[in-house]
Length: 66
Image 1: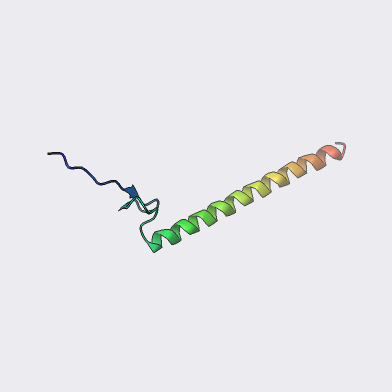
Image 2: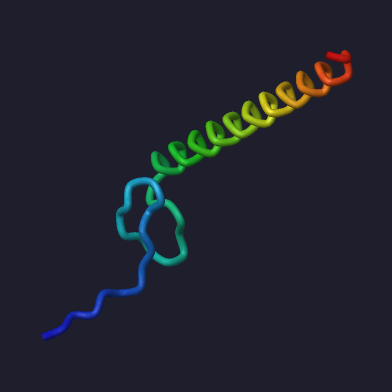
């Protein structure tokens, strides 16, 4: 006999089955998700800063005449 699995989502951090109305299963996973987002934002900002610095160096070297 085939059993039907009730509709559910999985926690984005640990993968546990959770109700459809939720995204994360516990406060611990919520804290881990916040830390992940903060790290991702910091990494993105650093990459843009490095790109801007690289572009500025190219612009300055091209304007210096050599």
